Length: 169
Image (cartoon, rainbow, N blue to C red; front, top):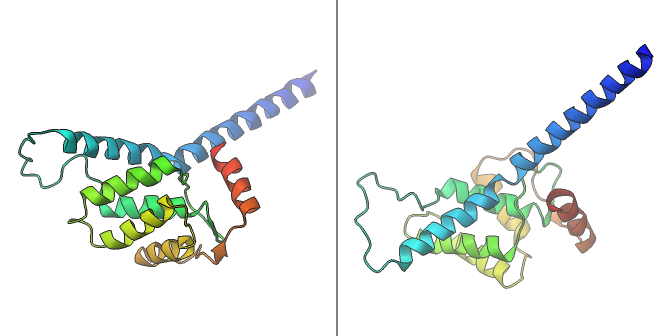
């Protein structure tokens, strides 16, 4: 009887641990997608207003995304397409996420140091051309001083399906 209780306790403990780890993984790896659409919606709302209120003197509108955050989102989107030893974070490369990031880039074009790079990247992705994913990943990886996880090639269609299934479904 004591063995059963002990075994049940261990099984419940391990199950709770796995659930907590799964929740943590989901929160860690998909946090950017919601932010992308939220920022894009705020920008579209702001641009849709006929008379825009004066911006506060703080310098940055709450609907703008800092360039470093945009880079991280782009980098995490490439993880769906590239082969690398290590990948930290993943944002699904959906048409909506691509469109939203393009909206953000266009709205902040004069404020981003690498706006042409982002616009070229996202325009190609919007047209279904992901052949630049390795270059995009490694460029951003270099900008951030990456030391592990350099992209070495593009995934096959089967590898990408498995990645999508594992991370988003």
